[in-house]
Amino acid sequence: MRYVFLGPLAMTVVLLQVAAAPYFPLMGATANPLMVLLMCWAMVRGPREAMVLIPLTAVFKDLITNDPVGITVLALLPIVPLAAVRERHLTQSEFVPIVVVVAVASISYHLVYMAVLTSLGEDIPWVQSPLRVLLPAALLDAVLTPLFYLPLRWVTTITESQARLRVVG
Amino acid sequence: MRTIVWVLAAAFLALITVALSQKGALDPLRNLVLTVVSPLERGVGNAAEPVADVLDRIADRQDLEEDNRQLRQQIEELRAEIADLHEKQALSEGLQALLEVQEGRPNDQFLAARVIAKDPSNLKERIAIDRGRDDGVAEGMVVMSAGSSLVGVVSGALDDFAWVTLITDPNSSVNAMVMESRTQGVVSGTLHSGLKMELLPQEEEVQPGSTVATSGLGGNFPDALLIGEVVSVQGSPQDIFQKAEVEPAADLTRLETVLVLTSFQPARLNHTP
Image (cartoon, rainbow over all chains, first blue to last red; front, side, top):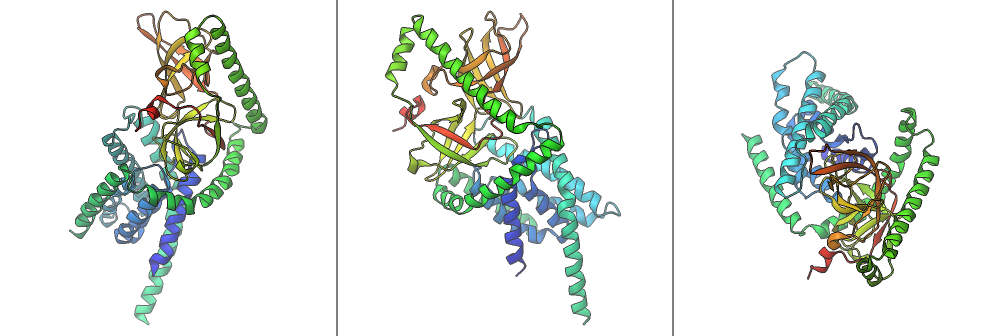
C-alpha cells in the first residue's frame, strides 16, 4: 500500500530532476534530487524500500532522458551498501552522517555513470571531472539533503509512533 | 546476504537493459513514455525557467536579461550575416570549387522544433526536441538556432522525439574556420566551459573577436554556418598548434526553439544504407 504513495512521489522527483534541475546549475553541475531522496530514504527508513524504488525510478528516468536504460540503476546501486552506515551509529546526530553519505553517494553515482558511458564508447573527460563534476555535484547534493531528510524524518517519526500505539492498544 | 543477491541481480538486469537500449530495442517504449511525460516535462520546465531567472537576478547576473537576450539574438543574426558575407567574398575571389559546392546544394529547408528537455546529467550537453523520425528527422542532421547559428547534431531519433548533442558536449567536434583569416581548425566541446578551437597552425594569426564558422570539411556540416566568436588565443611559439577559446553565438543554455536542417545531407547520413 505504501508504494502507492511512494511511487508517484519518487516519479515526481524524477520529473523535477529531468525538467527543472538543469535550470539551477552550480559551477556547471546539476543537482541529483532523485539520488538525494533515495539515499535519505535508505538512511532514515532502511534500505528495503529503497531497493524497490531504485529500479522503478531509475528506469523511468532513463526512459525520459537520453541515457541508456539501466545506467541509472547501476549508478544508484551503491546507495544500498552505503545505507549500512546507519547501523554503525558513528555520531549522536543522524543528520551529519546522512549529509556525508549523500556526498559520497553523489561521487559514486558519477563514477559509475562515467565508467558505464566510457565502456559504451563515449568520450568522458575523466581528468577534468573531479573539479567540474564530482565536487560541485557532491556539494550541491549535500546542500539539498535537508529538503528531503527533514520531511522524511518527520513522516517516519509519525508513522512509527502510530505503529507503536497500535501495538500497545 | 539478501542485499548482496539483490545488488548483483539488479546490476545484472541493468546491464542487460543497457545492452538492449544500445541496440534500440527499447526505443518504442521510450517513445511511448516520452509521449505521455513530455507535456508534464515541458510544464515543469516552463515553471522552473522563471524561477531560475529570478534567482539569476537575485545573484545580480542578469539584470537586463530580456534586453540582453534580444541583443544577443541581434548580434547572432548580424554575425551570421557577416559570416555569410565573408563566405560570399571568398567565393567571389575565385574559390570556384567552393562555389560549385554551394551551387550544388539545394535551398536550405528547416524543420522547427521545440526544446522539451535538457539532459540532466553533469557529463553531457544534450537537449530533447519534439520532432522525430516521423517528421523526417534523422540521426546526424544539423540543428541550428533561430538566429541561424550552429547548435548541434541529432544524436538519437525516436518516432516523435529526438536528442540533439550540442556543440558544447565533450563528444562534439566540428571542422571550423576563422572567417577573417580563413584559418582552419576543429571546434570541440569542453566540460561546462564552452568551446575550444584546436589544431590552429601556429603561423596563422587568430585574433580575439574573430568569427568562427563551419568549414564544411568532412561533409558533416554545411559551410559558413556561424559557430561563435574567438574569446582568447593560447599557445607559445614552441607549440605546433594554437588553441582558442570560442564563445558560442547561440545561448545554448536557454534554447526554446531550434531548426533542424533537413535539406542538408551530412556525409555520415549518406553512408547509411
